[in-house]
Image 1 (cartoon, rainbow, N blue to C red):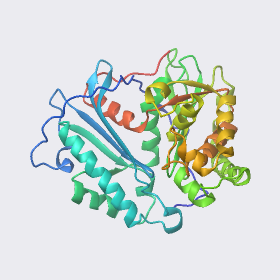
Image 2: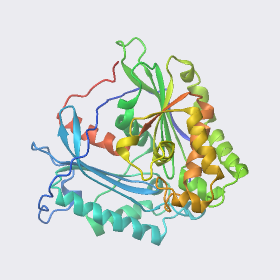
Image 3: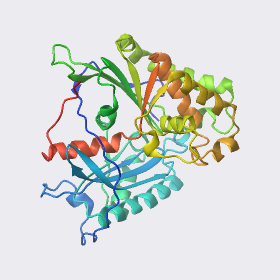
Length: 376
């Protein structure tokens, strides 16, 4: 792994934020697969009109695919896929992707390829994040994926990951807020973005004022501290580790949480799980979760309840399940550290992020709809 005490930061560099709404999922009939062409040969072909777009995000914990078509000033989802593959399992100790993890990921990517072909996708971007960029054999794995599935993965840097996540869910920020801290808790890294009013800009015009990518996520943190039996003591140790990594960026953006209507905006399995538990859902339902507001005391209540549960109790919860039961408290520790750095009374939950950001950028680059500024 890279130095666990170092964080990559974008400093004070500015970047405009685009916004679009994602419409409700629509199930369309599958198209016939394109004949005989590999996606690494045609992913960047010129648009022809009537495009079907795909975004694939292979993270440290999950493999996620989103297929969509343009719709008004946003897009309509026609297919989606998500599978927990734990690609980064054990990399904190070996700095290598294991053969078992590679096998799981390639199996999921084969399913993605079938869906991409079956939906007649013509424009796409496939990205890999921390597990591939931080390990000795990440590049070799990407080559193997191309050979075995025909999908050419792009290992994106932390800055790109942070900006795509911001583009994908910034539409959920309170338009009356002068500053928002947006975060994406991943399996191997955590991206945090400070969005603020543009100085001397038009009313409501926003930009990214700073960002940081912490080299820690739910998989790496749970690997180091344990995720099966989590006591208040090792939960506190996890919070302390993340707080240390976040300290420099917290100083840089220290005025954000004192601005009018400041709030946090979170996108990740951690925050959506917390929201599902808060809503007492028997089974996770994206339509109920995406876009809801939570008060911080309600977030804390859920975290306290999770700490009081055994592993088996967490695994039996319909919003967690066996695959996440050993990771959810590591995510809560990262969430607690972010709130400690940026105290907020409100948290907005986003079940959207990197994939949506990829789709938006592809559609904007094709001129499907104009690049928008985030305005009040």
